[in-house]
Image 1 (cartoon, rainbow, N blue to C red):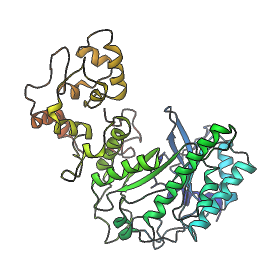
Image 2: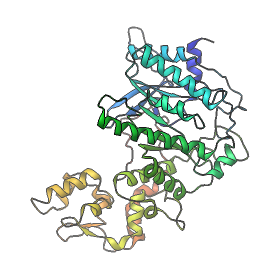
Image 3: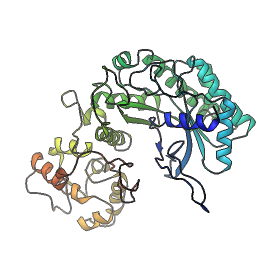
Image 4: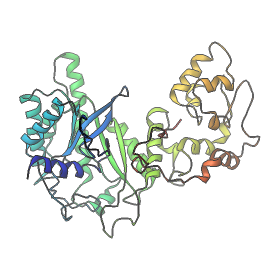
Length: 427
């Protein structure tokens, strides 16, 4: 099998990993044109300052010894199999980089022979890229749960970012759908990576040239909807991962029904709205000062699919509103639906010079169609007269309740990704 065929198989096998978003474009070059677009292989990620970068996203192999019920690459599934050699992965990466197709590598793999063997192959690839080819581009490596700590340490000395996929929120879920995986074999490597990063930071305080260990941090990925675990259970887990392992991100992947197994839920399409609500709640945990017990509870274990989590929280805590925009503390401004981090900062800065009114708020980026129910400006309230949550909810939903509540798919839109598509973030 030639390298191009392997690339087609292994790039396609990597598309269900959503730690980055794939291009989804497939366009052949025209006479006199420059370059092709490929549906698989190149994905996009974002830097801390918001720049979009292109990564070569492939599996080293899809020949897996595990038989996880939810996974397209499980050992019992009948599909084309391929495995790259370390030399092939290094050659493809360098050639793509020199042609300016990519700015880095996103490398994952099925578990070949054993976790240790797969990690040893990864390390061979990284050695060739870093030591032989002097490749200084970005590398994101998926660590294999159950691999020896020494192998993880070695890989971490080469990679910019590492991630260990937690896959399912609970040990019961793993036992049911992925019995060959153990939760402690997933959490253990996460802790090892965290300790390696902390040690590296301390060493660099003493020796400036001490080698970096996973300088871009670690992430993980959770599958949403493959088991009956509630949003509250998933959010509590994410909160614990951020606190205990200092993760950069938790990625939520709506379960894609690519397998037929009696243990899997019978759904026709991935629960994308639920995935979106979890991303919004994750944002509230990381940047808005919320905790999981404020957003959900055992009595209310799942998010409202029609309202974003912040709006839902505000309506359940309506006794805290309305707040006066010219006097409210910063942390309360962040809790008003329609006010984001930047607009809250602008409000705090601007009101030192003058009292703000609704026109001022609009100029500062506040989404008044949601915020007006929860605030007053100079003592004036412009929402509805009643502060009953049911009435405010009806007004917020308004015409949106008549729309199809399903999350848009970028690839179902006519002409691909539309320029007018807005990604809904919690503000």
